[in-house]
Image (tube, rainbow, N blue to C red; front, side, top):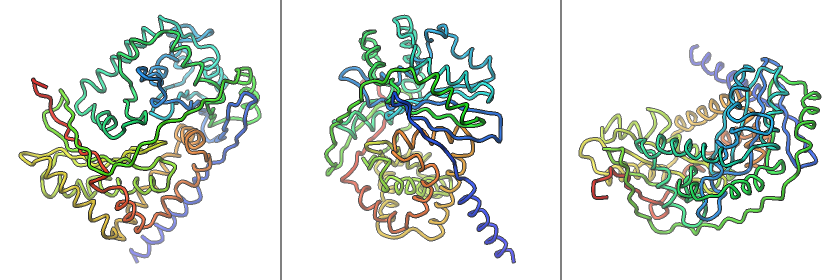
Length: 439
């Protein structure tokens, strides 16, 4: 009886996940090329106004890295109608919160307000785009802010530089080889005119998507959007022609050093397909299979059972042009990095040569069902998913159908993709080491 009840409960849960999470949305374009997506949800008196720009850390000129991340900060400095330093005060005094973040592929800004402040949110984002004040005072101020962020998150944080070390060794010609935060000497050397030219090139309505989600009346929202964003001039089309990487056919061996660690790490990193490809979704599942929690393969084997590692993990850093799949571990006691790598390779080989169990397969599918539900459980999550799916993945309705991709992945595909991309001759082997006095 208990088994029957469990099966019934599972079926009911699957039905809820399959049908109750449908996200309705409406799209349209302004004459200046700004793409707009509306999602109406009147269940709570909250609204988010968000803009995602098609500019990220990969968009730089030689010796001028880090501009996109720099602008993430700079565009809070103030506008023609918002005094310098007042942006956050305006938001908080009207019951709102706001933030921004930058990846190698895009930059995202948003405000969350009580729904009666929708117009304020739209006005502020239109001000950011139409009337920003980009002057030397703001540039100098934010230069110091970015330097402090780099010190805290990268220079003085244990293992803070390992992703940068992977990028600079795994990529030879594509701009993913540079760190998202950029090099501070590049920002120091840049002129005010260079920053202004960067804004003019990338921060234009036809290089962005506006998402408004939450407790809205669509007709009223459309009118406000046209009033505030319609007058902004269209910019020149952004043309990209990034160089392609040649396939890795021999193991790349490298070392990197970190002042802030005492325990080394071994990392094996693979250059894999961009996140629009089906194989990238499969690699997502492989990373979860290997290290999705304390019952996962790598953690259970190396940390829990064999007591060989303090930490063991697999990550899939999904990006537009190329993704990065990496396995890494920190040794316990006298265990060598080579030993850890061999033990992790053993689990990769198992994936390549036989199917995972049906039980593990169902567990994986359940994990991704749960992630899907959680990602669309708030207007904040819905807004970012809508923007990402439009701007980077060319299909807004992925917000409703992406879970079907994961559901359709087979055990055979997991085996075949592991075999295709995760071979030792296709990777970077990086020893991430404590820095010695003479290094």
